[in-house]
Length: 129
Image (cartoon, rainbow, N blue to C red; front, side, top):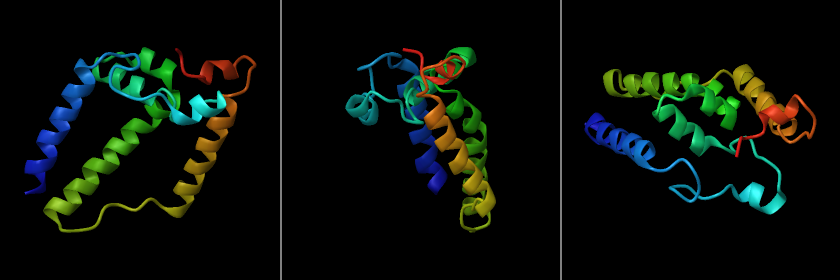
């Protein structure tokens, strides 16, 4: 029954991202953290990443936020497996091991700091405008 709700929503979401323009204010607000501080957050550029990935532009997506591109396959796999567990086996979603969650937190914080450093090669981590 959940599939009957999730599938049309996923298709509609993909269509929205695919057909919306790639630049603000096409379909997403600007990052509030960046607007207030002038610094990039770990998610800056993620909406443009979704748009680029929907169009199959992997290199452009990497230029907007390489962290989101790197994590997307793992998040998608987790979502599919968790949905499968819930629908077929009536089990709760997968839980990430505590060690993996800690490593992910360290990676996100390190990316956050590195993407705001004004020196090459760190400037490559900042979202392309």
